[in-house]
Length: 207
Image 1 (cartoon, rainbow, N blue to C red):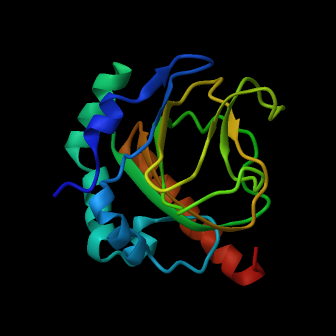
Image 2: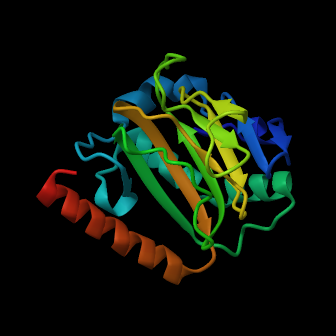
């Protein structure tokens, strides 16, 4: 049984305003939600960790394998009209968020596409932590779209100089898997090295 629902990608809302993005619900197969919830890694550190830094097991490990597989890349390529198959992927996982996260940004130029898969059982409207598609690099309002980080919600966008996004501050558990298609393996290796250094200093200074 596939853990991801590719038809959710094919049927997703796709918009080019203000930049190429899509939002899909029911991206995760409902029959394995309980198992994915059970097998989500026990991560104590805040922020995104690469898959190399996290102990993967069970259904969640299978999920990561599917997310990194060619079928999803092909489905997204067809949806966006961009061949993503030549680009290596960087997969990161977050369980705990801090108030300083979510500042408005576009993602770096080494990224081609970013996809986020949320895995939280519920989310209050006023809690913050709901990613917004934004029109500029300064303002959270007005916004084009707000993404609920609830179980099975998937958001993907093509990186550009105006792919502004971010979320209002939130502290606590915020489960999300991020897949980034990047321009070269050197970019993947550099980002992994940078992430490990950042986690190392967080461990020392508790930030």
